Length: 206
Length: 197
Image (cartoon, rainbow over all chains, first blue to last red; front, side, top):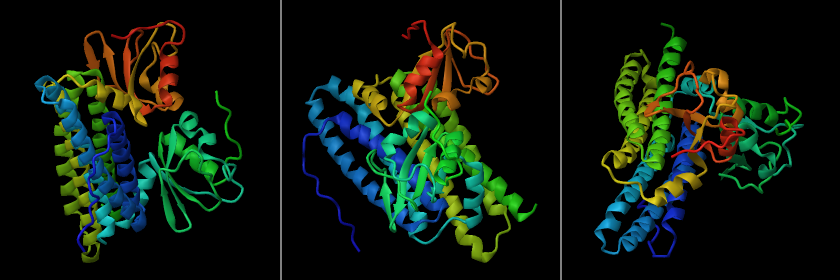
């Protein structure tokens, strides 16, 4: 089936805004893609592929903005070439994430033992299911203050057979949710205990 | 070697590839934020290190005696390695902007500061709890969520190790979620204002 490409229609968006989104998305995609490969999750992998197409569109829009900003002035153009190089690099990073996702969507898969060892040695990415009795049930993500409290960020939630990618601060955690988190090794562990109901109390913030 | 042991070794190499590629991204963004040749050169050095590590990893995977039905799972593993290499290349391309003497555009600095994962620098004052401690003792990551990527001391930029001692006057370059920046700065210079640049 031929791919459907989003049509490029110029709309004025600040370069900074586009580049911040490309940087954030490319980093999120890497973590999602590794999670999809190591937890062997096809839907999550498909979401990564969709994000990759979105980054491509952002890359076009950014390219247009940069050409407008250079206005035929060699000095401006020279200052801006670094911006387009960095944007291209974020695009390349998102391509690498898509390559990882394709391992899953094409049915190649990563050897299952790898996933189980990986979970033990790499502590920055973690999957946890919210169990009955956990103190985070019903709480808004923003209210949990996970980043300042334990250096952890929820990057995806599996609920009702669907993934919510990069959930909003106002989204609430429900019992049965599967959460993928990334961040500080100790923090991800601490958070897993909270989600699974092993820790009953959110530590007071210093 | 038992099968489990073999896998553990392969996965350990893969995690090293993954962590190195991500460290390179952080260092590349830092080099752009600070227009630092030294940090950009460090990215280049790591790129070479990645190349060797990647070869080791692939050889190890290919040399393990896997069964025919495991071939696909090993192919998947090898492709994971290729992806880390691509990420490392992307980081090296960013660092190259600095190495080619292109002054990073202000919009790049703003982008790095505003992103969810950011890079920052904090200088260590004499009254800081960090002064005199090794990085391992300082537990910067546990306290602030920020990873120390490099230490700037006098004219030199050092790559941190667990036993590196932090001295007052050092500038720490660190990456992490934007929320950790204030905590790091408070930890590094609690009372005394300490100026950078």
